[in-house]
Each structure stands twice: as structure tokens, then as C-alpha cells.
Amino acid sequence: MTEFASIHKGAALKELQVPGETIPDIFLKHAAKYGSTRAALRYKKDGSWNEYSWRDYLSNVEKVAGGLKALGINPEDKVCIISANCAEWFFIALAVQSLGAYQVPIYPNATPDQAKYVAEHSEAKIVFVQNLEQLSKTDSWRNDLVNLNQTILMFGEPPDGVEKFEELLDQGSKYCDENPSFLKDQIEKLTPDSPGGIIYTSGTTGPPKGVMLTQKNLVVESAGLLTVYDYLYESETISFLPLSHIAEQVQNITGGIAGGFTVNFAQSLDTLMEDLAEVRPTLFFSVPRLYEKARTVILEKVADGSAVKRYLFNWALKVGEKARIYRNSNQDLPFMTKKKWNLASKVVFSKIKTRMGLDRAHFMASAAAPLPAAVCRFFGAMGMDIFEMFGQTECTGVCNATIPGKTVPGAVGAPLPGCEVAIAEDGEIVTRGDNVFSGYFKDEAATNEALKDEWLYTGDIGHFDEGGYLIITDRKKDIIITAGGKNVTPQNIEVLLKGYSGISQACIIGDTRKHLTCLFTLDADSLPKLCEQLGIGALSMEETAQNEAIIATVQKYVDEVNASLARYETIKYFRILPNDFSVETGELTPTLKMKRKVVQQKYDHIIDLMYN
Image (cartoon, rainbow, N blue to C red; front, side, top):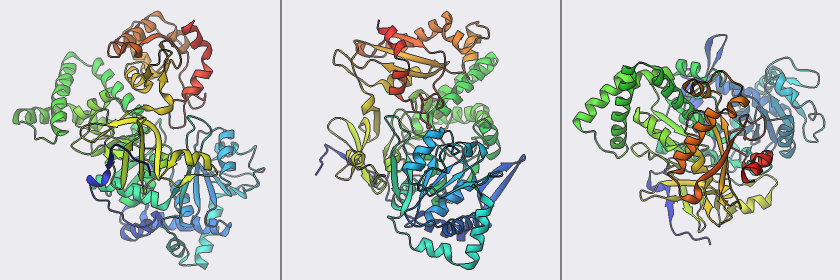
């Protein structure tokens, strides 16, 4: 039996409140509860917002399930979805789960080869594709996969051999007319061990692995979050992160069903700010990069304002930081601090929140990557505490989270109710509970490596602080061991470097080397402002990367960060790359995590120059 020095249990936080055995079962209950009185899903079309009530939601799930049943989908079968976020995505996911089958998402920005890998490896019987553009990714392989019986186009006119989504709905409607209690009967057959889905990892360290999740995993994860944040029931959310990722599924499909949310679909990432202003969600979840960019935009606008506005904002930020410290120590604000805070909030911060579309947000969270402490403090000073979360697909998204009245910049909080988290001898974070996955699909070796004595070995390194909050230091496989034998956690240094204006990515190099170096990429959004401040005219990205003023500015950033580091952690040389990292060029995963090995292999000639 595995033993650890200390095990932190989420049960100490709050007792877990589980609302039902399966997500489809909870869905039926909430569809009956809300009926036509509450919107479940909202989307924008032709300039107007349209909605599906909970009754509409149920009706469409029933039709899709009937259509899939007519096509021969049985328990344990796999159904792939390649699509951007939309209501139809939800209908398909719930219908598949209701039949006891596995929904298997494929990232909409996946290449044809990546899409084929998931469809083929998962042995999918049906693939849903959003539009003709997504359908083109299947052209070279959809007729060759042994298990694939049908491809269904969700929007547009399909070519021969591809079924139209409306045709599936017609088949389903007919099937349901002939079998009136069909969906209810199917859902009653489900158990906590029934399939929840297979979600493929984003592949930072190798080929994607299919994480097999059960209904118990999904229910316990949603219950854990709603137990901690019990004020979130019937929230308004906005869906813009890829549904192919566990975080978005937990927030808006499983969590949305368990919490009775109204989910609003952003039109695209490009229209997110416009959509936010119109939706004004009460719950907002994002990856750190968006918060970082929002902070940069706010500071740039302040810098462009008058001297009076700059003074007022900086005064308000100082007041807000004092208020944040009191608030997150569960202390009442002193009389004068409270008066100043109320004034700062009303005169300065309320206007910023309104422009961001977050004036109603009483919950803001971040996950998938470290949130820089400076960003956490910045928004906290504006009265917008960001709850940082930690987890991975294998534990259904989240095992640790910060809580109201205790957001600690740089910490990811305490275990959720129902979870246990411990630190192994080598510093690796391990967790167990009913939210931990059942294994990798068709990969026993990887399963045995990740799961030992019911404990999930996360691959992350960290420790608990005195208050029982988890601190992440790095990925175990990313730790650099220099030629001098020093262990360096690059992620912490990279987070500091990415906090500067104009920087998009920073990749620390130095494994088996005598010292550290760094590859930088520039941020196309904030770069024009930096160039303006430096008196540089319009240049291409490649020209900017070679500009002496830009190089000198990045050197200043490096010097400032070096000053806070141990000598063996300091960066001796750096290079600025002529292009940013992206999913399309292979350096980032679909969830925008850096593929360190890919970066080092792709730019090895530049790295060699820094050491030679």
C-alpha cells in the first residue's frame, strides 16, 4: 500500500453533495423542473440571440438519441464530434451518453491526420462534423476506417455518402414516436460505471492518449465544484473554450446540467469581447492567457489616458490591493479602507468591469496552466478574485481549487470534496477519489504508469503551504538538470518572463547544459504599443525580432527576472524568434500548452548558436 507523509482531504472543506447517479439522469430531472420557464442554451444568429428552453433541450437530445439508436449505436460504442461549440454539440453529447456509449471529441483545429488518429484509435462508428471545412479533414480517410459506418454533417449540404443532421433528427423523431418512453428507459439502464466519454489528451509528451471517464467521474466532479461554490446554481455562462477539452465540458455540459446553468455560445474568439458585453455572464472561466491579455489591454488604455486618469487608476489599484488582502484573509475592511474601496469601485473599477462584460460576474476562475501571481493580484485589486484550479483530464478536470475569502496568488487551493491529494517522495502530486479516470483506452502500460494503488500520478511537482493550499512548481518531465547537477523548474521563470509587455512565449533551455538560455516569441497584439513607446515604426514580425531596441528591451526584462533568481537559474543568453508559437505550426497543443520537445527540436540550430 502506498504511503505518503501527509494526505490532504477535500472533505474538510465541505461535505460532498451528489445530485444523482448519472448526468443524463440529472438532465431529465432538470428538464422536468425548468421546462419552458428557463433558457438552457442561447446562441446568436443574424444579429439576434435565440434560445432553447430546457424542454427544447430535452426534445433535441431525444431526437438525436433516437436517430443514433436507429443507426445501430449500442452501449460502449464510440461517436466522434469535430465541431466548434454549439447547441448541437450538447445534443449529441447527451444523446450518446444516454445510450451508454462514449462521446469522443476531436479538436476543431486538429489537422486531418490528428482527426484520423482519434477516430481510428477510438474505433468510432459515427463521426459528426460541423461544416464542409471540417468535413474536408475526413476526405482522405472516412471511407477507409474499418469501424466507421456513418459521417454526419451538422450544418450545410453534404456530398454523397454523408448524412445530413436534419435527416438524423427526422429518423430520431420517427423512432421516438414509435417508442414513446425510449429515452427515459435508456437512461434508467445507466449506472455510475456507464461511459461518460473518451477525451484524448493534447499530446505535450507524445501521441494523444484516450482518457476513459465514467458517469461517476462526471457526477462527482460536478458535485465537488457545486459543493464548494454552492452559489453557482442557475448561473449564466459563456461557452468559448473548446468543448474537446475537459474544462469546457465540466463547466458547461456536465456542470451546466448539474447546476441548471444557462449556457451562451460565443460566436467565435474574435467576437468574444462583443459577446461578453451582451451576455454579461455571472460565471466566467478561462485559461490564464486571456486574463494576461486583458490585463495588458487595461494597462495600455490607462497609459494612453490623461494624467488625471492615470493617477486615479493607480490610486484605486493601491486601495484595491489593500482591500484584496483583507478580503482574502476573511477580515472586515477597516472603516476608512472600506470608504476608499467603495469610491474606487464605483468611480474606476465598475466602469472597467462593464466594458469587459463582467460586471455581473460573481465567479471567475482559471485553469489549464499557471496563472501569474501578478495577474491574480491585479484583478483581485479590482474586486475580481480569480479562483485558480488545478487538475487534468485524468481526474475529470479539477482536484484542487481556491475558495472565496482565500485566493492566494500562486496557489491552486485545497482538494475538492471527495478528493484526496498528497505529495510523493520525489515531489510529484498524486490524487485519488471517484473523479479519477478508469484508464487509458487500449493502453494498459500507460494506465499502469499513471494509476498505482488507486492514486493518480499527475506528473506535476508541488507542495502544500502552511494553510493547506497546493503550490505547483513545474511539470516533472520539464525539470531541467544542468551540467552542474542543479535542478531548475523552468515554468516559474517562464511565467515571470511572459508577464512583460510584448512577450508571448518564453521557452527555457538548459538540460545537461552548463547554463540556461531562452527562446522568446513576441505577442502580435501588444507589440504595436511597445514599438510605439520605443519610437519604432511599422515593421514585420521578423524585422521586429531583430530590432536593436526590442532586443535591448527584452534584455532589460531578462535582467529584472535574473535579479530575483538563484545564480544557477539565471538566463545567460536569449534569442527572439521571428514568429510566434501556434497550434498550426506544432509548438502548442490545442489547449495552448507549449510542446517543449517540439520547440527544442524545431529550433535546435538557434539553440546551438546560443551555446557555441
